[in-house]
Image (tube, rainbow, N blue to C red; front, side, top):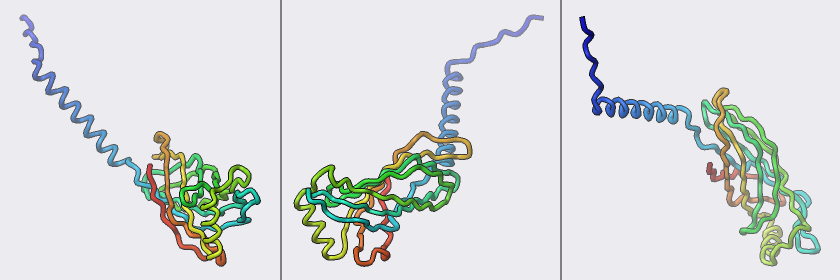
Length: 194
């Protein structure tokens, strides 16, 4: 007996199968993204004080800003691996001091405190006259208000799987340093962008 002849699938069936396969792939990708998408990280300044804070004869700033940053990972499934953190202290748009903190690993739903000493480079530049006068005026009043900016490189970890590197930028406006009472400080939340 002769075998029945096979017919080729129609163009319509091929197109329908391709569309179905694409829909399945898109649904799988969207579900993975919803399941594994990391939540936004939270960074705040928990404490700020100064040590050796003074002006040099050349008009530069000497001393350091001692900062305690709080990094919170709200993700239930993802750990965060911080490669490094760079911290800058600014006054009215003028860079005053900077510091670097080494990387650390943060498990899911964890709080980590990082101490950073942002040192001023007194001989590197002269501060503008209006900035010097503003800092002196605020220091005489007992409080200095600065902005703290944080830049960090991070990776999210899901078990053994790691994501690509992300750059985290945090801006902490109006961090008030109290000279007479350096122990009193109110946490300042930062605006975080990934």
